[in-house]
Structures are given as structure tokens and as C-alpha cells.
Length: 252
Length: 306
Ligand SMILES: Cc1cc2nc3c(=O)[nH]c(=O)nc-3n(C[C@H](O)[C@H](O)[C@H](O)COP(=O)(O)OP(=O)(O)OC[C@H]3O[C@@H](n4cnc5c(N)ncnc54)[C@H](O)[C@@H]3O)c2cc1C
Image 1: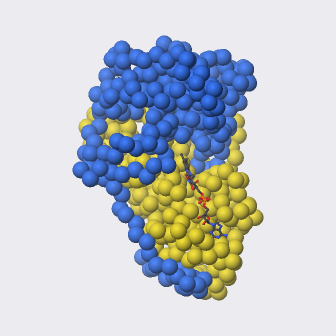
Image 2 (image 1 turned 60 degrees about the horizontal axis):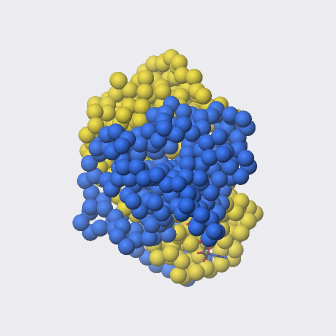
Image 3 (image 1 turned 180 degrees about the vertical axis):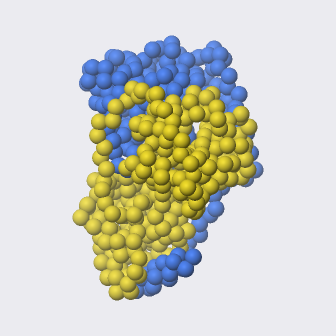
């Protein structure tokens, strides 16, 4: 079985971001970048399937500027076999990303595509579902457990009411949630080896996809700031505060 | 400009989130609602501002709903759902079929084509204009007030011709009489320092006294102290209660992403330097195991009557 994993380079999830004062975006120069955490779980899931002998090739793809090579190398060090960078400096909307990935799927014909459920920058949670629509494949989003028997997948998903388990046939699209696994930190020899694995850099123009944005971003603004309130000294004081708040609520 | 809202269900019944989505959608035009069960159809027809109910017995799966909405899309300018697991599953899939860039997780409607949504775990807000011929949107239910009672709206049955490739095998639903976390007025949340599932009984007890829903951090869920549907935050539920009581919760930015809409935050924490202490309205510093039983007892004495 062949698996395609999509990975995104984003502002590291531990960085507290700053909105630019002119409202044009979020400050990214000089900010630590890394692989989107959900994508890391997707790579780990693919590597585990390979380790169980259920997958024989893992291809990892990223769409973005040249620097996205970093996250492809991280995935190769974790155990993916080869990489594809679809290179573009233009910021792309999720529909354009899904269309580019659909082209890669058409070329590579993977049995399974694994993606993170969302990217921690735009927080969109679109791409897996859109790719599923464009390739007319079934989807299992928010995956926290994946079992493969033959050409059937059994996926447990994290949903609003708890968890549910669904069955779907290959070829399919899965998006990873954080409880799917614990991503490995690649050991140094793997990091060194990753550099010698094949990595194809392909200009975005090769794919013939219309990338023009559909939405106009008017502004990016900081959320309303919350300021520290007061500290109370005792449990009775706190109980008093709670009663006041609850009474105010009831009055409205 | 006509709007079709995909109803939000909770175990075949209409979820309280639907009235909030309808209220938000009504700012865009007259609202029809698509539901998949007749019980929900009846409840939805009594929401103020609903023009018509469409009923189709679609199985609760993404490709089914996406295809059903696609078939109906010619009749509508806006296709709308909640930013729930259902809406997240269905609407991007539908949008791609329609060749439309969706706008999701909307927290403010600034005009017929202008919407605001949080990015970077709520640490920034993005305002976009959507000038596409059709609009595929999801709304964050907790950001909108529910529509009132109205109707009854007429009901139309839609034939369902969709065959899904996906089969539902099992549902793991945590049954309880605790109020719905996403729409509760008061939420008591516990962190990993609560220490065990038994420890969470203290949180639940305080919650019960206040008629509150119960939430948890991801660390508490990962440790197995609380079920995953209690998780509040960037990757859990986004809530906007009138009051959030954070017990033994550090206030990591991914957790705060879930409670930015809370009107008042009370923090109980042993560490005066915890990030949550810097943003809470009222703080009590101390050990939660000493504080919780006493606080619950005091509140019981005061008989809130909720
Ligand atoms: C991509 C990503 C997504 C995430 N999504 C979420 C999410 O949706 N929701 C979420 O919650 N987290 C999420 N996290 C995890 C988040 O970063 C934090 O790790 C988590 O919120 C911390 O949980 P906590 O407050 O329970 O634990 P800790 O950070 O360990 O805090 C424990 C707190 O308890 C206090 N304490 C300890 N003992 C006591 C006592 N006896 N009495 C009183 N106070 C005490 C401590 O002072 C401390 O403040 C995510 C992380 C990542 C990387």
C-alpha cells in the first residue's frame, strides 16, 4: 500500500503570535516555525502502518515556499521515503491547496492520504474534506485510532458527543487528531539519512491550477484583551462572588 | 438572498445549537432548515425566523449530507452549518464540490458578504469579504444568541438518493444529565491537577450545585480523568458561558482559545503565577482539594435553586 502524507510549515504552536499593528497579518519574521502538530501525527500514523508491514511507500508532500523543505526533511527523518515540495511564495487558500493535492493524488495514486485535521495558523480544518470531495474518496476526519484489514479501514473519530467508529473502503482520506499517537523525535542518524532521501521540488505553475484567491482579507486584528481581575482571600468570599454572578445572570 | 441551514442534531433530537445558527443565518436572508429526523423537524419548525423545513432521511455521515446539500444548492445563495464536527465534516466537502472557498467558524456577521473568524487559536481575528456567487459558511454557535420561538414552519420531504461509502459501526456516547457544554451558561472546568477520575467527582459536584456543565483540559482528558467530549480548547469545544470556573487549570493558550467568549472567568489555582491568573476576573489562590469541598458546601447552604 502507498500512503501520501501532506504536511504544512507553520508558526510553532508554542509561540505566542503578535498581530501586526497595521492589520495586514501576523508577525512571522524571526519567529520559530515548525511542522503543524496535527501533520506530525499524520506522519507518525503512516510510519506505524509501514512498520506493521501494512504500507510499503510513504510519500510526503508540502506546498509552500522553499523553506517548507524543513518540514519535509522532518517527515523523512521520521520514516517517510520520499518528498515532494510544491513550491510557491504565494499564500494559498484551502481550496487551492486541496486542488494542488488532488493533482498530486492523480499522479501518485496513493491508496491512503493522511493529513492533519487542521493547521494551527489559519485553523481552517478544510483540506482533508475538500481533497476527499475533489478525488471522490470517502473521508474519516478527527481520527484517534486507525485499523487496516485488507482494503477496509476502521477509524475511531473524536466527535462532539464522544467517539464513533466508522468503516470505509480504500482508497480513502484520513485526517489526524492529537490522540492518534505520540509522534517520534527522529534520532540523529535518521536526520542525517533524511538528507539523502529523494526530494523533488516542483514549481506550482507545473500543476495548472487556478490559484487566485476567492476571498478578500480586509484586516487581521487582535482579540479583545482580558485583564487580570481581583484576588479574593477566602472560600466564603469566592462563594459570595459566585452567588452575585449567578443572581445577575438570573436577572437578565 | 435565501439561506439553507443544516440542522445540528444531538442523538436524533434537535441540538440547542441550531437555534443559534438560525439566528446568525437570519441576518443573511430567509432561512430554510434541512433535518434528517422527523422529531428534529418538528422542533426546528418552532424556531423563530424559519421559513420552511426540509426533511431527508440521510444517515449521519459527511458524504451523505454533502451530496444532499449539493443537490439542493441551486435553490440557495447561502449554505450554512454550525462549526461542529458535523459542519466541519460536511461544509468543506460541499464547498469543494461547488468550487467555492468556504468561510468557517464565523463569530461575527459584518454584512451580507463580510465575516469575521478567529485564527491562530483565537489570538487573532480575520475579517474577509466573500464575493463568490454562492457562500458556504459555518458559524460558531456559542458566539450567537439563540433565536426565539416561532412557527410552525411548513415541512417538505426530500427524497434521499445518496448511498454512502462509509458505514457507522459504533457510537461511544457519554450519557449523563449534565447540561450541554457548548451552550451552558455556567461551566466548571478541571485540569490535570485534579489527579484522577474520582477527583473529577469534586468538579462534577460543584457543577451540579450550580446547574453547570463540566469541562476539562486536554491534559486531563489525555490522562483519562475526563471523557474527550469534555475537552475545552482549540481542539476541543469552544464555549462562551456567562461564567467559567477554571479549577487547577494553568491557562495554556490552546485552552484559553476555547474560553475567550466567557463573560466572567473565576480561577482556583495554587500558583499565583499561572497564566490563567493573569486573565481571570476573580482568583482564589490555594489547593483545589481543600477549596472545592468547602466551596460546594457553602454554595449548597446558600441554596442557589438552579
Ligand atoms: C496543537 C495543540 C492543541 C491543544 N489543544 C488543547 C485544547 O483544546 N484544550 C486544552 O486544554 N489543551 C490543549 N492543548 C494542551 C495545552 O497546551 C496544555 O498542555 C493543557 O491545556 C494543560 O492542561 P492543564 O492546565 O490541565 O495542565 P497544566 O498545564 O499542567 O496545569 C496544571 C495547573 O494546575 C495547578 N495546580 C496543581 N496542583 C493544584 C492544586 N492542588 N490545587 C490547585 N491548582 C493546582 C498548577 O498550578 C497549574 O497551573 C493543546 C496542545 C497542542 C500542542
